[in-house]
Length: 218
Image (tube, rainbow, N blue to C red; front, side, top):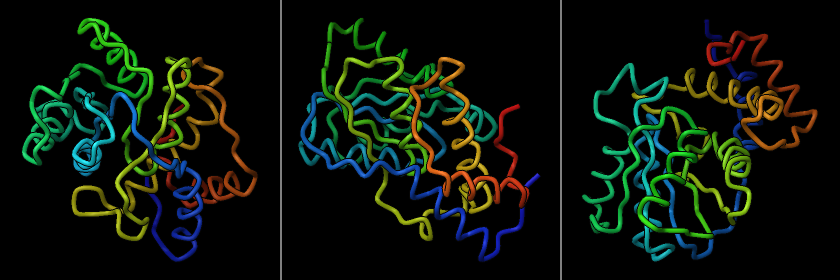
């Protein structure tokens, strides 16, 4: 089920979009960690950060998740790595973790990969989709609390973000589902708690009532 996009839906969706952003000012770190998904623009953003000198190491993480297993056969991380290499990131500066299927596994499997390589970076920039910044932060801090963390995403406005592969209706459904997960997942041990202002939750409830429910958990 999905709702119909109109002016009111767009207004409330913008509220969720703004909430999901952390707006972290970036600084140099030890490792850039790009979290895989159906949005290949995340790979471009991560490669740009490497090429701009923000870190000497780029880890790309992602197998085939709930969305991509239905549309791709090549793991997310392998596609991200290929994009980064095409943009000029050296192959020996990229580590590929291509087994994870969700955000928690992104973090846990990356921990394992770095340990296997004898690497222990202390400061990270995590690169994720714009509407998953906050949930990525909450998940990372649950599983790797001792590390310093900044989160960023492709620098795209809500109006400009949808494209042929990621239509607006899907974006809104996923944003609604991710806000529900920010509220529910701490009790399940998946994330640290994050404050949700009442006005943001009001917009969530509006969008749920409008039919944007396809990404909700039971």
